[in-house]
Amino acid sequence: MLNKAVIIKLDIFISKYMSTYGILLLRYSLAMVFIWFGLLKPLGISPAQELVENTVYWFDDKAVFVKFLGWWEVVIGFTMCVRPLIRISIFLLFLQMPGTFLPLVLLPEVCFTDFPYGLTLEGQYIVKNLIIISSALVIGGTVRKNISDSTKQHTYI
Image (cartoon, rainbow, N blue to C red; front, top):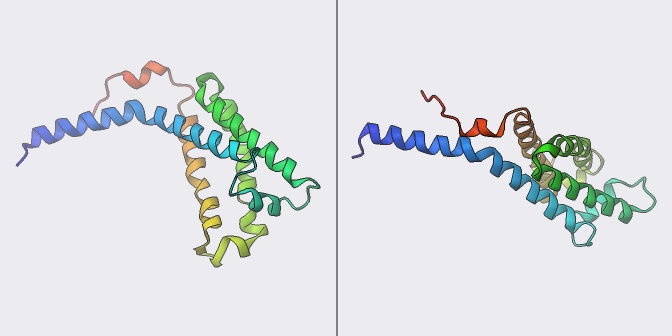
C-alpha cells in the first residue's frame, strides 16, 4: 500500500502541474475549436450550416452570413492564442454567444425531442456552449495576471 506522504506528494505534483498548464491548455483548445469550426463555415462543409441558415431567416443571403460568422469564429480563435488580444477574443465571443442559443427559441422542433429536457444532437451542440462561456470566464479571469504568476510556488492544504 502506498504511504500517505507519497500520495500527498503525488497529489501536490499533479495539482501544481494542472495549475501551471491548465489555463494555457484551455486557451489553446478553445482557440482550436473556434478556428476549426469557424473554417468549416466559409468552406461550406459545416454540419451547422443548415441550422444557422434556418435560424437567421431574416437575412436575404444566409450563406454570406454563415461565411461571415465562420470568419468571426476564426478571429476569436486566433485572438485567443495571442495573450495581449485575449480581451478582444472574449469580447467577440460574448457578442456571438447569445446568437448561438437562438435555435433553442426559434427552432425548438430541431433542438428538442421532448421539450424541455430531451435534446437532439443539434440541441446538445448548442447547450455545450455553456462550457465555452465558462471557459471564457476562466480565461478572462487571467488577463490581468502576470505570466510568471503561474510558475510561482503555491501553498497547498
